[in-house]
Image (tube, rainbow, N blue to C red; front, top):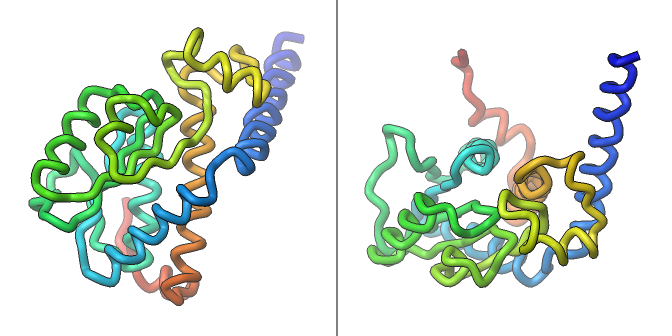
Length: 206
């Protein structure tokens, strides 16, 4: 009985998350998405470095995005890895933080701005410290860790039921799907095929 109940909760949560992401498709600004895509295409053509950053689960989403950018042919790095080179003027930073307040990410974005890099912020809160630093903001809805008061509007508009999506789950899952969509758009704009990506895929893996 307990096992069946747990299974039911799992399926309900999956449906809740999928439904939220489906609704978010129409909430994410096409203009913001286009600005992000154009900056990435420009960085690719200039040979600029891309630095992707995020903490915790947002960082894992960022790593997945960075891997796909690598497969496309970008010079891309992830903050926190040992092989991150110097970030220079004209380079591009993609900073992921649902709250826009994660201290490490805000501080790193400030450092990037100081050397002349452009910052793309992916956050639920455009008016957050990260949003105020960024050159381009993509607002991705989702319940974040600061949920109770500040996510009230999002909960009401998109119908979030908190117990089924703890902490930042909805933001992180929505951002993951959004960034996978960005990858497809970049492939189209840069004339890349799946075969091109396969040719850049690791052939020695753990």
